[in-house]
Length: 95
Image (cartoon, rainbow, N blue to C red; front, top):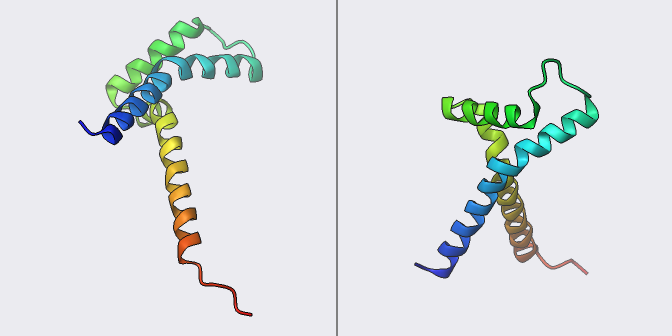
């Protein structure tokens, strides 16, 4: 396996793990701070289990939430690529 492929798989696995296990808890804590107590609150575990169940059902919002850390990193990489390509293609200034 090539080093770049291995690095990409490690990055994807760690960011997907973060999105799957850590991010739902962070969403819960931010929601508690901003909104306050939820009615019929089942706690952080209830929210995490609901997100996982929604993912299993193919709910697009749950998928976006869990995949968002990896998507943000890919978006930043793409932006950096465009920025560097623009710097290479830019013509020299006219004097």
